[in-house]
Amino acid sequence: MVIPRRCFGSLKGQCVKFNDIRYTEGARGTLDIYRPRGADGAPVIVFFYGGRWTSGRKGLYHIFGRALRSRGYVVVIPDYRIYPEVRFPSFVEDGARAVRWTRDNIAEYGGDPRRLFVMGHSAGAHIAAMLSFDPQWLQRVGLDANRDITGLIGLAGPYDFLPFKDADLIEIFDGADRPETQPINFAHGRKPPALLVSGGKDKLVHFGNSTRLAERLCQGGNDATALLYRRLGHITVLAGYAPFLWNFLSAMRDLDAFVERVTKGASRPVLLTVPVKA
Image (cartoon, rainbow, N blue to C red):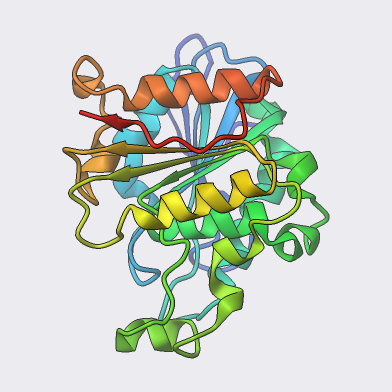
């Protein structure tokens, strides 16, 4: 394996983080990889951060990447283009390119491309859901969600939030009422399994986005779970995966259980329940 110039945390020649690997052109066309030491055929999580499609960078999520890595996942965190440089659907197209790169190359970093999950928080969850449910984006890079995506993990995601009322969102999505921008409108037919996580104290993205999407998926016979952590808000639902909270919150254990279940091919009953957790 050719190790990129920026390689950190090596032990006996095994790099545990790779920085700034290019997956597409442009200043924001790079990604970071967090690899467990000795990883060989580990499940893979491609994580898209949030930021209202206007802000964010992968370097801010190193703690999150390390936390998932410590659970045995190979973690890929890409940057992607944001407003005002671009508008919808450019950030979704970048997400598709990042998944394509991961599918083609992650085996060299100890990951199993046949066990590839897309995950996102807030705006990043929207990107991950669009990739999972609207087939055109992955098809443009030669992939198929039902074949190449093992599952979706969405945190505090806006999946059903029309009409846009804020001026910046109307600008980002080129109109106030565009159904083709909403993941819920593609939640029919066969889709990858989904774990949709929300916080009961989220004042930015109501948990109804997750429950409505899970209900729509279940109506189509798909595997979908909505989890509501009643004490968490929009940002703290992401912080719930931090190692120091593992003994107090079940978020990481719930993620582990979802990944293990779907990679083994075990489906849950097609019945929507919304467990409310501490």
